[in-house]
Amino acid sequence: MKEIIEQLKNADKNTVISVLNKNDALTRFEKNVIYTYLFPEPLKDMELVDIYKRYHKDHKPTEEKNEMEILFLLRAYRTRQYRNYILHLLHAFIQHQDLIAVDNSNSSEGLTCGICGKELHVWDEPGDRETLGYYSHGQSNQDLCLDCIAQLCYLDELLKTIEGNNYLTQYEDKRKAFGSI
Image 1 (cartoon, rainbow, N blue to C red):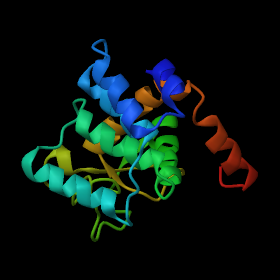
Image 2 (tube, rainbow, N blue to C red):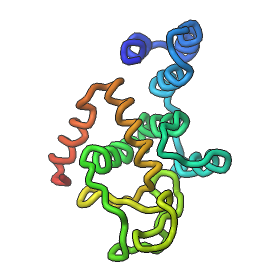
Image 3 (cartoon, rainbow, N blue to C red):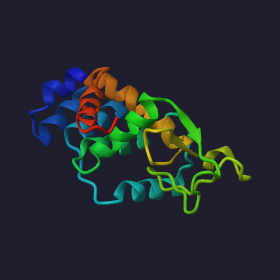
């Protein structure tokens, strides 16, 4: 995919669509990744949560690889208004891998996932694992559900394929320069 993105990065939409339609070696998901990466549609404020909520009306959230959710996250990552937020979540939840279940010592009132907007509960409340909230100690003030953390892991793998294993380095360097790491 990386090579095709590099070849098509200066092409117009019609050319990209034509090339992708003719390439039988790529899966539908890979074609969607390439198109989304090259032509991300802008998102309005809180639109990512709205997209997830609409999608989850018909599809149950899962820790399994969900290509649609990965495309939602890729779209957000490639847009100006969400890029730093997604980079922050990747840095906090994937790079550092120090997830902690939210407990009663944290404020749990109105606790929702920072990606999909699902209501979450704290560790000692009864409930299923799917709605348990997690945060990354010292790295984020954002809570996420396990399903969204799993999809972030898949996005991380995808971005490493497209941008290289050190795609987060530039973000980390910027944060260090501003003293936020």
